[in-house]
Image (cartoon, rainbow, N blue to C red; front, top):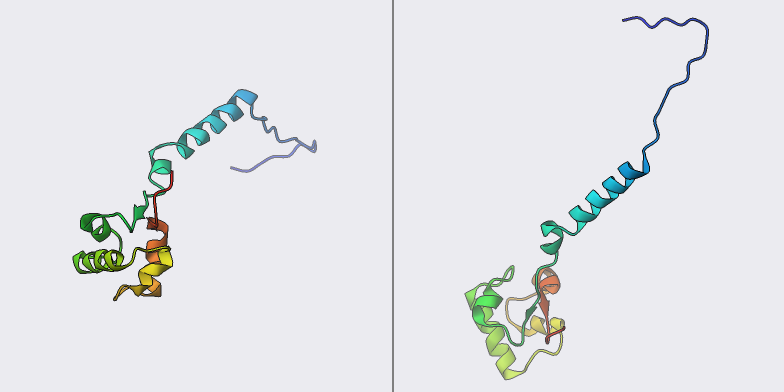
Length: 109
């Protein structure tokens, strides 16, 4: 289709959003931000001084053998910081970096 101009400058009509539409969009965004996806964004942290073997083994990079080694190390000397986990054989910088967002020392409320 060919556009025809009659010499008069036409103005493009762009309707402005109504306040109710803006509020509706903001309400939708608020619901999405607080929905089930937001609740699963931060997993519950595991206290490495009180967690059982199963809880420790559920952490990334920790299997049953490393969980047992963690329990043995904390029985000898409790962990005072997350970095103390490095004293467990088989846990290096890379594993510790993966674990940091998922572990803690002591309970926090």
